[in-house]
Image 1 (cartoon, protein in one colour):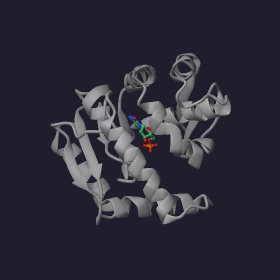
Image 2: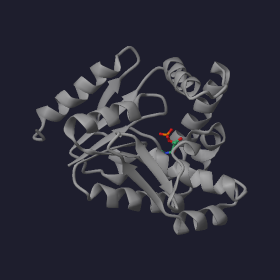
Image 3: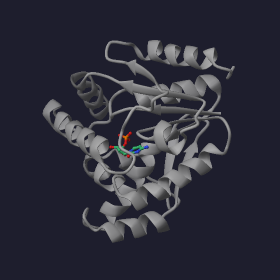
Image 4: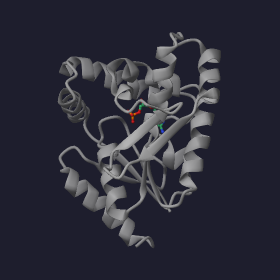
Length: 222
Ligand code: DC
């Protein structure tokens, strides 16, 4: 059973997807983390962001694994090394959308995501899960929120892990990523026609989780 949760950065996808997966005892897959892991490697190897061939080669020869731990923390392994912390660094966030727009990179990641989806009951969050990766997903959700609210949420998350950023820094980054993610040629961020839209701007996390679970229960899932 596949549940797809898409939407822009800061809409609450990963928090909600994680909690929904926990409530249903499903596997949680953060697909953005995969693009981030590749970005870590691109930066570590000193590749230029416009070195398309070099980046594609790295994507095709790297091993990226997502591991759900018993402590409910998702670990991201890049060639066997834990990069769960590194993938959240501002440099990675700055360049990840440029890497995720490359068609051949997406082909590698989508294949990986489909393999993981075969494991059975899975909640995936991303940008193209309901449109491209799993167009036949049993339930699809599209989460969004006002821009200012999304910036504030990201700002809080970053401050919590001790990253010194301002509202303006985060706003500029989100604006840039929104533009790249939604205007790229391959699999742009877009609501699937059959996805349920939820505007999370003034909703608590619990209220969104409840709404998602209710929609799932309305179906044939539980
Ligand atoms: O969800 P996130 O912010 O961690 O995602 C990081 C970037 O990865 C995002 O800016 C766009 C890209 N991405 C994507 O293109 N497709 C996905 N399914 C998930 C993320």
